[in-house]
Image (cartoon, rainbow, N blue to C red; front, side, top):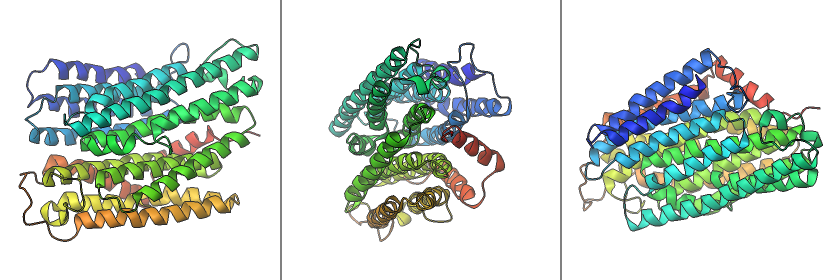
Length: 477
């Protein structure tokens, strides 16, 4: 069943390549997204056994990420039908095929218990997303694509070097060199500390580049700003979650070594630096899609801080992973509608979105309120859990900086978002003909409904899943 979840999107990619019609090809996306969702649900109801050699396993950590990317991709797939109907002037073959391959690779990341296989899957997502960022075929998009490829490839190469160091640390400890998680965890206390610490640093930098942790985030503003909204949603909500899962796998080995101080301090430092960078660059940001890129930098910082704090913050970090993915879906899809309607991403041009495209403008405003940690939406719950855990553990400085950066970011985002949605649209604005449509509004609206529901009530199966995933990251005495 696990192989089916991973491989089914490849059949969708093949069909997307074969179908000649630019009009009907996008229908492949929601069809296979629904099939993938059903398959994912079946793996939860009837848990499949691990693969014979333990390379493919769906554990609670993988399930959390799989739920996030499955829901997000389903929304993006339905949205894509309405969006691409408006973009008939451009071939969508590469886009549809790339999205399907990317879903396959992201799913493989969630079930990989061999770190080498996980690395291959993560690198596949990097390669498949590059032509999708270039979808608009202009000078800015090609610059963003090259910057994305160059920086992420360097990061993933550093991660590969970290995996070599990790395997060598097992060899130095007189064990058979391995990257299989189920073999590394029992032998973690015997690993060479020097080689393992070197491996951790390279893996943190490598996977941190893929996540967009500051100061490794420099590809994000261009890639998020120039990619279509649905591609930006998958970058911010899908690929970030997969890269964070890779970091979680490394952290599992860290806690198994029994000496976590260095690793936790490094994670907290990177997280705080990311929030600080986001706070600085969020202020007076006029490009609302680049603003969302810095918001992503902020939230990967929040995830990393939660992981570094441990304890009760682990539950908050994992819940925030889900919340961030879904909320970014709302923001990128609605901002994509606004961009298409106005033909601009600049808040000095884009004004009065609530009047021109009320549904998209309203969702963009609601998404801003949610992503900044305001009640009653679910990001408030996860962020509050992390902050309260920081103070409970007497990390007062970290808690204070966390709150300070949240306040600055809230003000910076509010300045841009309110300028976009409020007021009246300029009279001399060029008519684009793009308005709210059911297929481009319903998906982000559904995601917004889930975010509101999870802020008011958490289903017991989800709570059990998050607690089970957090238990895998807790330090054992």
